Image (spheres, helix red, strand yellow):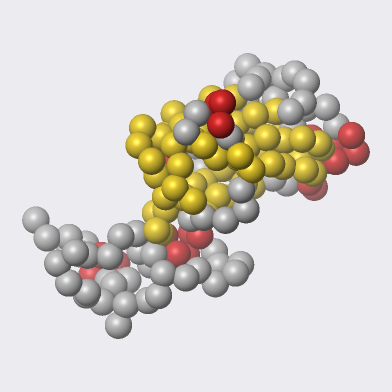
Length: 165
């Protein structure tokens, strides 16, 4: 009765989080930016509000550095940008790199285990100089129980009692 650990292409991470397939782990990391305008930094990038955003303030590439204390499995990385609102501030070319530290980062295209993620904005639409990113979320798969395989509790009533105390 358990679901396979494969995520269908285009699956909504928020829906997968509600069903217990993945969980957001951005709060477990230390975040830093290459630059930002005052009041448009990490707090706005992580506040769950699509009306706020990070705005870089410097030359490209614009960097978002995400560092974990221990090696972490990253299944999905979600970046929200809004061309209609941000136009030339919207990233058009992004590189995602992972590694143990700043000195051994390599570009990736698949799920991985890593200590660090770096998102590099290499270019913006209309040759814009600075960039806007409205939200970044990082998801890891939820581990199966080592006690046994139990069906997932997906209703609100069941989710209140899904852990053994």
